[in-house]
Each structure stands twice: as structure tokens, then as C-alpha cells.
Image (cartoon, rainbow, N blue to C red; front, side, top):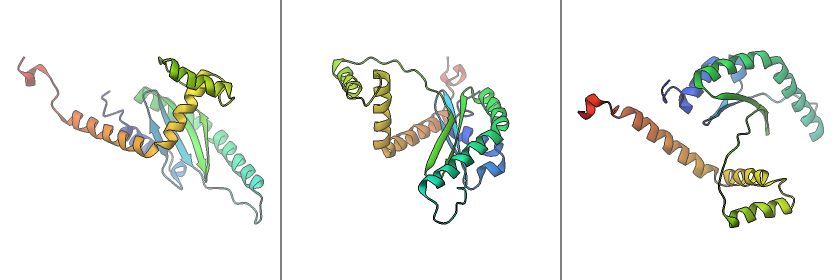
Length: 182
């Protein structure tokens, strides 16, 4: 398998064609790809609620819709995930979006090793001591989420630039001995 076949664009194209059409209504699936995982988030139409329904009643309707969709589509999602995992050599996670509610059904928590100097460890320890986080690992994950939320536009631009570099790189010379004269 080449990098082009498992690029985020290729993965999104495969899922877009592989998913049942009714799963793509009312919006195209949101597909996120990293080294370990492909996350597919499907958009569901919010359930109709009685006029004057409270926020709690609306939330209960959404929770019921998500639970029903999850159960009704489980076998089909597993089948598609197995195909994708074999094809792209990454795990597949599923989720749904209903209005402002986003729920992931299953997804990976991948351990990441890092070395931190004392000032960075003190930041994590402060978060733990203040009760913001349960552990240094939780504090680090909290910090990463915070940075991601506050720099999402910049990170998006960076990802787009990296995709462009990969496209240019794959269109360039192959580097075989025939082209290098060795």
C-alpha cells in the first residue's frame, strides 16, 4: 500500500463511497485520520420534540436517537470497520453528531511517551494539585485539548500545508537507481 492510498483524502473518499447513503444524510460524514486511527462521525437529524419541550426533554430525545442508531447499525459498522482496518492498517472509531451534541462510541487512547523538564512537570503537578486533573497523564491530555481548541485554525492550516507537501513529494521523482544514475 502506498502513502497516497492511505492519505486522509483517500480514506475519506473510500468511506464516502462505502457508507450506506442514508448514513450520509443530512450531511457528509466527518472523517479524521491520524497514524493510529480513523474516526468517522455521522450527522443525524435531530428528533422532533413537542412544542415547548424543555432542554432536558430535548436532550433525552437526542440520547435516545443516538442509542438507537448505535444499536441498529452496530453489525454494519463493525463490518465496514474491519474492511477499513485491513485496507488502511488503522483502527476505526465511530461517532455521531446531532445538532450541537457530538458523541464518540469507541475510540483509542494511545499512550505517548515524552520527556519533561522540571518547569513543565510543575505545570502538570499544579493542575493535579488543584483538582483540574487526576494525574500527570490526565493533565497533559487536558493541556493538549486546550491548545487544540485555542489554535484550531492554525493547526488546520498546518495540516493543509503538510498534505500539499505530501502531494508534491509523491508527484516528484521516485529516487530509483535508474533515475539517479547509480
